[in-house]
Length: 297
Ligand SMILES: C[S@@+](CC[C@H](N)C(=O)[O-])C[C@H]1O[C@@H](n2cnc3c(N)ncnc32)[C@H](O)[C@@H]1O
Image (tube, rainbow, N blue to C red; front, side, top):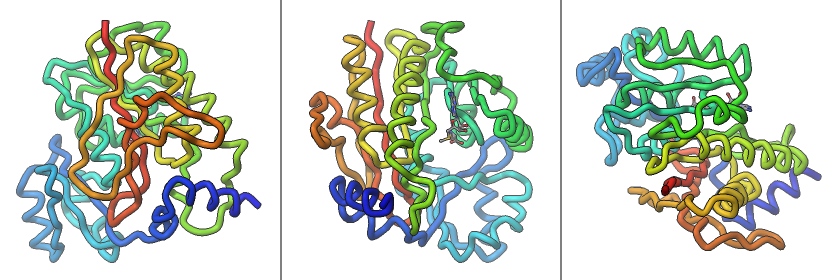
């Protein structure tokens, strides 16, 4: 039953998604600049890999999936000079423009891949993760990757704004979600109740993210799921609650994208949500949703 409901809903969003959901042709990685540099790529080439750089970043590369097992034995990987991360996640994190003096809040941070990106550009990063096991693995991840400017907090993101209202120049909320982008065959753990439960949590988290942001600052809300209840509805909720929130369009330099959906079942969202971006699964990109939000005074 859940399988049919899931597939029906995805088809209503974009039928092409279903065709590509299970295809995993390529994977991506980026240079971890705390440990590696351009020589890292040469060392991979010397070991027989042929990494292809993406057109939109200097330090992001793609390899075919058949190299996925072999790369963990490469010298670049074992020395933590590269970080394997989905292309959609990298693109979303790179879309948050960070200045050298910025203090960035990563409100749902484990395992820490996006905080690692921010730490290379910002003065400092605060990474929040409530799950104890994930929190300690994230701390180890930061240590192994040579980071010095990330403070970690084993806390619930929903309440962070109470102790630090308006403190952060930039905020990233990579929200916990129903992870529909990772369903690659039979639906087992997915159901509509889960979608609704996550939607409620995401609304609390986005309020905390927005309240923690400085006036004039920017934040990104993201998920790895397709359901509009967890995406456009959450953005629409924020816009309804705050007059000083504006969605800023992110231009994607690739084709596998669509704009935010305005109508879903009986709901009609604000026209502004069309400026959100849905990344469709393709090559090394898995499904993703992101919206950049500016906080005016
Ligand atoms: C999509 S993952 C984040 C991935 C991470 N940003 C990265 O790129 O490595 C979402 C995270 O949110 C955490 N989470 C769940 N409930 C939360 C809450 N109430 N506040 C903050 N984080 C929460 C989950 O444990 C999970 O680690």
